[in-house]
Image (cartoon, rainbow, N blue to C red; front, side, top):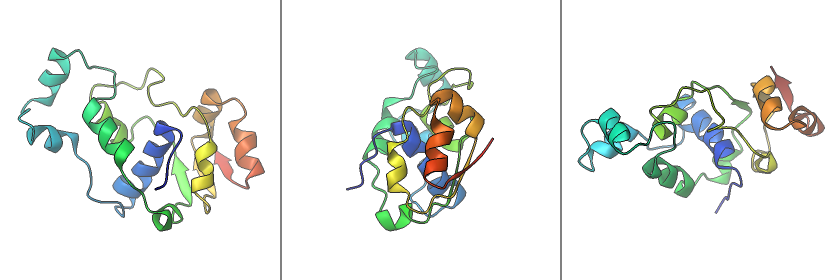
Length: 145
């Protein structure tokens, strides 16, 4: 079992494999997931349960438990940090990108991506982890701001 240390870093990998490359399936849809549990109006559910600007329990559990095979991780050559990621909207449907909800806290999970060559969003990453660009450079990963 591949274990990620940083949930938000894992979400970046999920974004790449599930929503961009479509190689990690099935594709998770919070709206569909909640509909299957009897929630027809996701926005109302979030508001009624005071869940705005939080990662909902259902997608957190799904993505934490999601197994990503090593062979699939080895296909990741590029990661991007962008506040508009689909995976972020699946986790927190009422999120405006104005806080640190999805900030990466550590880069230990780089070990899981042996072929990573490019990280786009370096400026944002540098604000999350001050020495991030140096860590990437030491591993031969190009950071694009």
